Image (cartoon, rainbow, N blue to C red):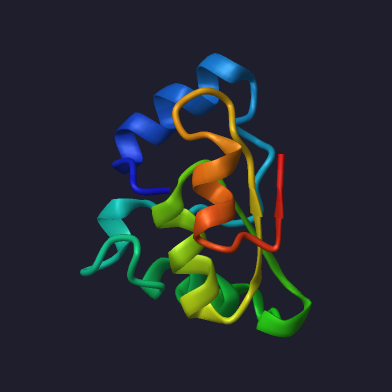
Length: 96
């Protein structure tokens, strides 16, 4: 996430997702934010995941660009902030 670690912890606790992740990379953990793929590549490395077997889920064009730059498939989720058309314009692998 681009959020700070503090903001992520607040949001994760509020949604009941605090224990749902094996690894959390926040904006505090990278020098370059999205659309730079640094955070995704860091996660792939730490989790020892093959980019060709990985997906990145995002809700905006910047997320899809970062995922594509990291060499992973992308899933664009539109929930009001960005439209399905915007996610299609940046070539998300799948979009909803």
